[in-house]
Image 1 (cartoon, protein in one colour):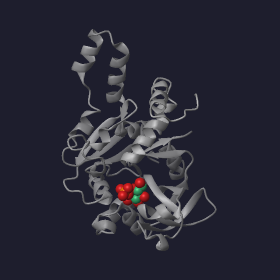
Image 2 (cartoon, helix red, strand yellow):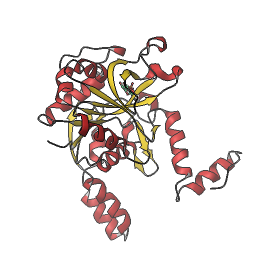
Image 3 (tube, rainbow, N blue to C red):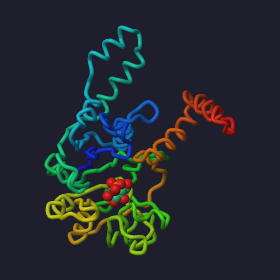
Image 4 (tube, rainbow, N blue to C red):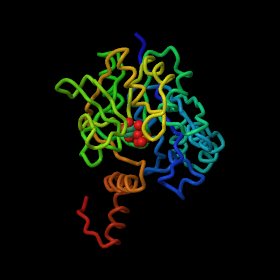
Length: 293
Ligand code: G1P
C-alpha cells in the first residue's frame, strides 16, 4: 500500500489582513523568528515523513517557490565570507524537500486551490494538505498524527480542535460519532452561524485527502463566501466512504492575522535562547513586568 509522500500547501491568498506589509511581499514569506511562515509548514511536513511539496501559488507569489530553490551564489558568498554556519542553513532549505508549483490564477477558494494541485498528485492514494497560516508546536507533528489515523482507516482525515461558541463561525465545523480523540465524521459545514454549528469541533488547517475528495471537488460549486470550499468537497466525499477526524495533541499558533502573528512572535521569541533576552528587554522598555526566564 502506497505511503503518503506529498503535501499540498496553498499559498494563493492575497494577504489583505497584513496590508500594507503584503503589498509586494507574499504573506507566506513573513518571518516568524528567523524563518518565513511557509518554511515552518514545510518543516512540519518533512518531520512527518513527507518528501514532496506542491505549492499552489496565486499571482505575485513566485517568491514563495524561490525560497526553496538552491542559491549557489549566496552559498558561495557566505562561504567566502567565512559564514559556514549560515551557508549550511541556506543550503538545507533547498534540500528540505522537492518542490513543484501550480498556479491558481483567481482566488476562487481553498477547494479550487486544492483541486488545481490534483493533476500533480494523480495516482497517489493519499495526499496531505497544510494551510501555512497556523504554525504547529507540540510533541509530534500534526500531520504525523493525521497520518497515523490514515494508515489505520485509509480514508480522508481532518484535524479537529474544540472551539468556543463565539469563534466557531470562522471555521469549518463537523458533526461526529464516537468517543474520540479519533472520530467518525458524519457531516461538515463551512463557517456555520453560531446557532447552526453541528458541534464545537472545528476543522484546523491540516488534512489527508484521497482521490474521492479530488473527484468530489471537480463538481463542488461555490459555497460559503461565494468560494469553492474544501469542506464542501469533503462533505460530498462522505457519500463515497468514511471520513475520520482527529482531535490532535499540541497547539496551532495563528499567524494568519496581524494580532495572531505578533502574539506568536512574542511567545516563540520569549522562550528562544537567542532572542529571549531581546524580547524581555522590549517588554520591560514598554513598562511591562517580565518574569525572568
Ligand atoms: C479554512 C477552511 C476552514 C478551516 C480553516 C482553518 O478557512 O475553509 O474550514 O476551519 O481554514 O484555519 P479560512 O481560514 O481560509 O477562511
